Length: 173
Image (spheres, rainbow, N blue to C red):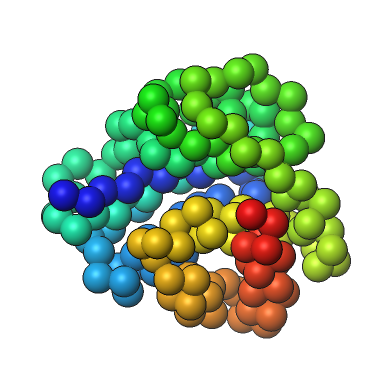
């Protein structure tokens, strides 16, 4: 059986839920069963939030991520709150400027925000993160399917900049 559990985390307003929805859409297009869930505090903008995706070659019987294969974080607060239950051989992907305690997993740090600023909009950091993730999942999920899902899900008029950020992120790893 094949199954991947992915947890995105960040501050409310950073677009991590959109990134997770795009990932789940692409997984379905690739022929997987997929579920996507999200959680955020009462202070929706600015507080720690998470979005999770499970995709599998079998029906997913429980929609919550229990032990993520990959954990992605755009804020130190979200990292501290949601990094607790990673798989022993899991991967953490972090914005390189975050000061975070060590978590028992391989940690990969990338200049997510600096890369997003190259598009002219730091708010595209979620797409940079999704591009990094795409390179880690390339054996299971074709990049073209993620690009297609971005085309279908991002707000009208923002497709070009979001695809640019996604490809910048993909090139980082």
